Image 1 (cartoon, rainbow, N blue to C red):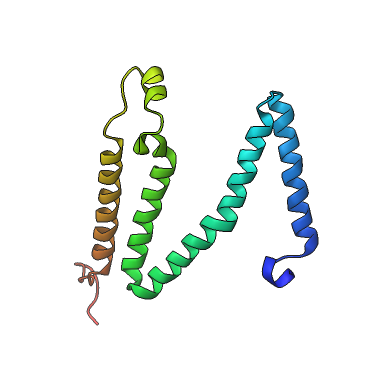
Image 2 (image 1 turned 45 degrees about the vertical axis):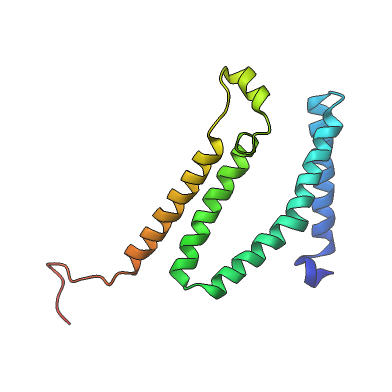
Length: 148
């Protein structure tokens, strides 16, 4: 277990105890009937990330680094991270999940979020690829540099 986890059993026990303490403090701070739902969502998010998302994006990252040249892989990784984070922040309006709530709160209907997210992701990819291409160009001599 130590080899697989990467630290001692006491380290794991400490993290589990800290997580339980954080859940208790959060439930006390909220002091609402829905606090248990919030704690359950947080625990589910932690487990979903650690057991599903982390192995998945680690595998995809390793495949990318094996398949593509180093600069291209770094550029694509940067674009994917930016697109992923913007999707994570804006996924309800991108997927059209909260149209009525959004319209009620904002005063206008959300439309075009998916197209704008695709445009932002494409722009991030193009900028990352352009930066990788520029950094790959051989550097010329500057005026004051000595000849070799």
